[in-house]
Length: 137
Image 1: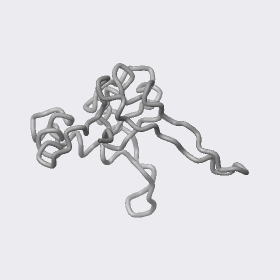
Image 2: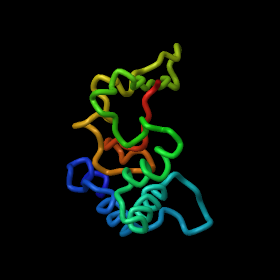
Image 3: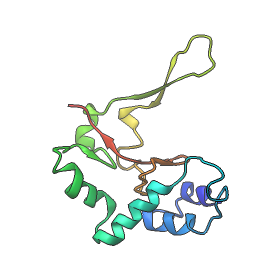
Image 4: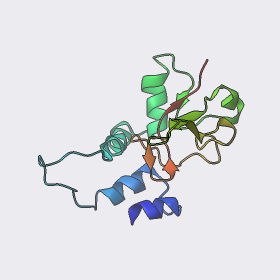
């Protein structure tokens, strides 16, 4: 399975990821169903091909920097970890909807070397987390 291959470190780049998901059949015939997918990843790869730049460099140069978003990217450098907020989720069916820590800044999946190598615009490929992240001022 392609997700298992990502988690095993066999698929490491957006180019490899999109090449693999392009081989998969559609889950539904066009127009008959809707579900979340990997279309953001595919358009990210199209941006790489058209611009001739890796997606993270393109977004930094063409989007984040012009908007003054100096701390937005696909990972957070160790020097800015103290500005990264913890991520929590609610326990959906618990009697007391207690928050559960999902991502601790001190051992975050967005901090090298744990950050994803696949620049996934869709956010995550199963356990291989990714997507854009910003630090707080």
